Structures are given as structure tokens and as C-alpha cells.
Length: 189
Image (cartoon, rainbow, N blue to C red; front, side):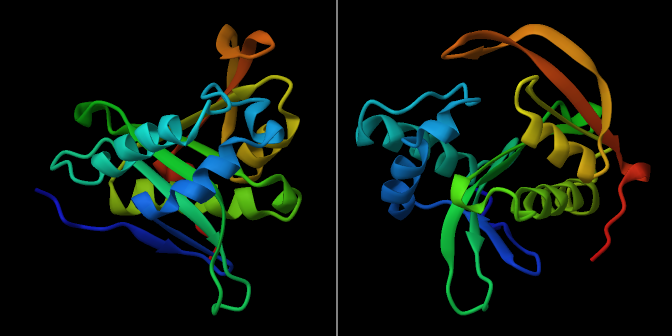
């Protein structure tokens, strides 16, 4: 079994593997209406539902041929305190294709501070430099302008619009599709 634990750092953030001890924070996080607005997961009915999802994410960490990285985003402005503020993930495609899809959710209290941009940029670096990917994609609901802005800020290129592909609680939403190639990525840190 793989025992390598992924832990990534930026100037303000730690991106770390999840643990069952994160249940309370993840449950409260996914219960926020702002997080649910563009999230296909939905608000969990109870902690048991959240625990099932958390067990799945933690289980991915043990795979020898890992395809999913779901990491806690911790804010640490002073490097002494770590505060859970969201999740970021990278789902890998077929090994031959050398591609992946990045996603993220940040607590609304931290919106507008460049946190999502910083977290996604680090996941792109991880995907290209550590995992050797060739292409990383992302998508967001057309109404989610904040998310589209994050994807553009990290250097992703708009590749179009996918019709009625995202099942939100308000109904089917079109998505804006983005991607970046390894030779387009610029790590500024």
C-alpha cells in the first residue's frame, strides 16, 4: 500500500491530507448554503452522510495507483495557527492521457482574498511538477463568476461552454470549461 502523505505549502496555506478527525469541520463547511449553491454534493442530511464521503476521500490516500487527491485547505497567516477553510482536489484521468481535473471550495468568509487562487495554483504545480501531468481541466457553473475568475487568474484558458451538464439544486446548469497545459503553467513562487 502507498504510504506517501501529500502535504503542500504556499505562503499562506497548508494543503494536507484529510483525516476522520476533520469530520466536524467538513460537515459544518458543507452545511453552508453559500458552499451548496454551485456544489453538486448538496447539503448533507446528517454527519453520517458527511462521514461516508470523508471515508471515501481518506480511502483514496491508501491506493497504490492513486487517482484522487482531496486536501484540506488550512489558512495560516502567522505560520503558528492552522485554520480549516476549505477543500481542494485533483482527480486524475487515465494514466496514458496524463490529465486531471482540479476543483475547490473555500469558506465564504475567505472569498475575495486570493485564497482559492493560491490553493488552485499550488494544485496545478503539484499536478504538473510532482505528478507529471500534461493537461489539467476545471469547470464551473456559468453563474459562478467568482470561480471563473479564479480559473482565469491561475492561467487556465476558456475552452467553451458545456450545455446543461451540472446538476444543481436549482436545476441543470451550463458549465464553463477551462484547461491549462504543462508548458503554459507558470509557477511564480
